[in-house]
Structure formats: C-alpha cells, structure tokens
Length: 193
Image 1: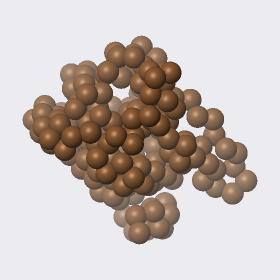
Image 2: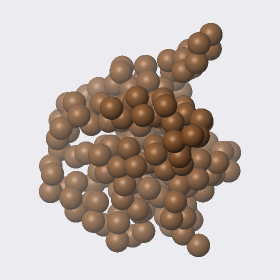
Image 3: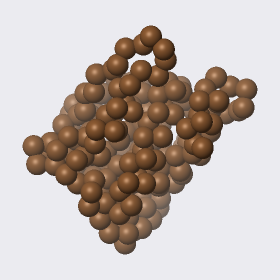
Image 4: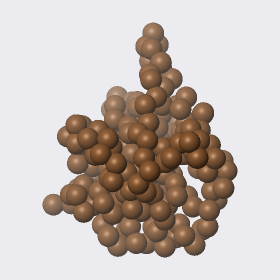
C-alpha cells in the first residue's frame, strides 16, 4: 500500500547533485539553494537521515558550500560538526550506484523525500527506479530544477503519473512535525519564516 503521509520514523531525504558547476545553470538557482538548505536543516532537526549524491565530481564539482554547511553544522549546542560524505555516481539514476542502494537499504526506511537537479535527468531516473523498487516517493517540487522550465514541468508530470507524490519543503517539514506541541516545531517555524 502506498504511503500517503510522511512518517518520520520511515523517511529519508535524498539530495541529488546540488553541485558547484551545474547549479548556476538551473532556473531560479539562488531560490532553489535557499529552499534546499531550509529542507535540510528541518530534516536534521526532525532526525531524518540524509543521503546526498554527486554526479561525476571531477567534472561537475563538489556540492555547493552553503548546502554542505547546512548538512554538517552542529544543530545543538556542544555537538560536533558532522562529516560530509556524498555518494559519488556516474549513473544518472542514484539507484544505479551500488553504494547508494547499500546506504538506502541500510536505513531500512521505505519513504524517500527527494530533491535535486536536474529534474528531468538524474532526479527523474532516480524517482522512477525508487518507485519500481517499492519505495514511496515524495517529490519536493520547490527543491528540484532543470535548465529549462519545460523539462522540469514534464519531468514533474511524468514522476507524478508514475506514483511520486508532489509536495513542497514547508509541507514536508510540518508533516514531519505533526503538531504545534511536538518537539522541533519552534525550530521548524523559524526555518520557514
């Protein structure tokens, strides 16, 4: 049965290829970066594991520095900075990379929250493969982009018709939180302001 709501104990966030040499070519890239950072910070507050990929790092560069900071900065006082360990891939679908599949399976979670670039290539192929492998996929539409709005639009349509559920970063964070009296609500509220 398809998961209709995101349950934090079963969710993982997958970030696809937010890299230095390709991000500047994306439509609304600055807004995209800001939104992805908010989603990452919120997922960390809610205890959601995060898997990040990098497509052919030698050619496309590292993950954007501000995104790495959001992934590694301490979220509580006196806690240490985390290490950033992206999964290197050359296959467009992250599911074609054994290290990614292994990392995902190790978490034993079946709900994937996903954002990344480009929507119509690496994100779409990963989403289709995740669905085919039995995962429930929540496509965070304000955390994906392509060089062309047309490519993004048709990718969103195809992923949705294939079973991915479209959503937004703010919707994801409040769904993970579940209520105003829940732990993390105040921190999430500050993020989305």
